[in-house]
Image (tube, rainbow, N blue to C red; front, side):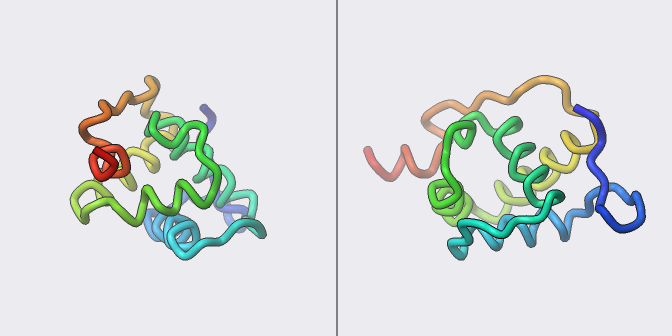
Length: 104
């Protein structure tokens, strides 16, 4: 995947931009995402297989259920993917997916 850049000055997507996009998903945004936010959402789908087919609402619920350490790791993985350093799609076992754990 090519490196994603903020539309303004060609800077790599920051952790704050990723967190802001995740926050919009957590609070139920369904549309109005910028091209940078869409790239972040696509990278989330690539690095976390449990989100690959989710709609925005389901992604928000998933993100809301994550712990702080899991969220930090996910932000790092998304940023790495956007920078082109993460080549393989991560797989997440059912036991580590908070939505699936809660439904058992």
